[in-house]
Length: 256
Length: 249
Image 1 (cartoon, rainbow over the protein chains, first blue to last red):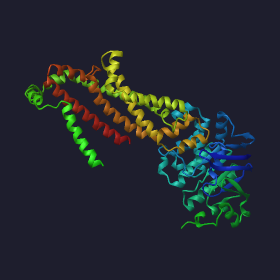
Image 2: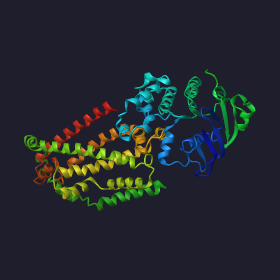
Image 3: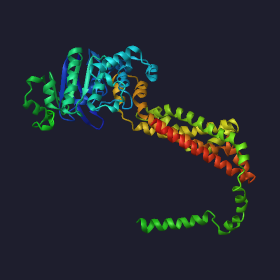
Image 4: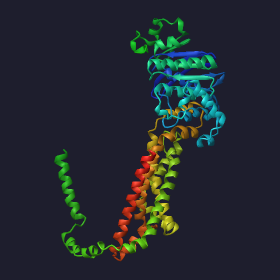
């Protein structure tokens, strides 16, 4: 469903973020990408919706070339891809509902979105999404008044509201505590299993990757160094990906 | 270095400027005798005359300020988004809008008033136009710099979901700067009130015109009550703006 063909990304300034990555992800897969900071995880994720344009190679979704898509085609492609971020990226001053509704922007005319005249259908989708992550009662609360875990759930609801085929999660739990992290990962897993949404998650906590992952991808210095089932991964494999022995900072741990 | 060269230089330059500007003890002594002309009348305020003749003009001054600040600030709002790199990646339009705002800022409000009194005639209309440019310039600068420092994350999230640029800016950038916009607007409104009085001196409507005509005849007995009325109005408006600010922000 998602194909990376010889994808390389060199940032201006000469930083070699990705080097000749070729990878296939099937529909409905739940993929976890691990690697050190700077290994290229975020970059790889962003080539899927072309937030980062590969300097070499192409990314295909359902045989459609994302990398060279026109502006119009790209908007259509992006509307089918939901993304959640490490820093949540909510509009702090707006209500939770308004934030989730921004997931419907691609489906609504500019005029309507500017004046906040959301069609009933879109509002219903927004409420459904909030319900799916269990924070319907917070719909009219200001974004910044929520805890980190709740904010990330709003982020997930926003992505869900797009009714996406693909879900991209860039270090979604990096700023959350162990319990909340597991709650968020649980939601992502559920959504993948119940709705069949192809999911790619960047993580740097190894125990979390083992706990929730099915397929594991390892990146090191912009190159693909591991691709296999999570159950087959040994500590040696992890050390390979990280280029060193595992430290306690690589593990999320249990709650204190 | 500073003490050896700087301070002596500053001292020398100040003394030099003192004489250069024409500060002359004899002139001062001579004109001090004229002070009676001013003080005799200044402290004999003609309240009745002032209230009867200046009230409407004072109202006009305030109306000019209100209209001009609202128009200027709301025109500046969309312009500021075009003049900020965060929301405008098109270099050409960015340079055009930013240069336009910079240009507007270099022209003093008094000059705008003179320009518009020639273009559209004496009176409040010229005053409004001049202060619209004044408000636009200040709001444009303050707001575009505020937009430069917004959190780009929500914008990225909106773009990632397939939203159009305008949609992304409206839902994810605009809400971030609304508190600033409101604060700047209230500040510019206060500035316009004061500017409006001064612009009246060159014929752009309001109470300035009356002050100027009375000054020519040295009727400070009529000017002093007008000044007090203006002071009262300015204080009242500033108190209102403090209250409003607390309510909204």
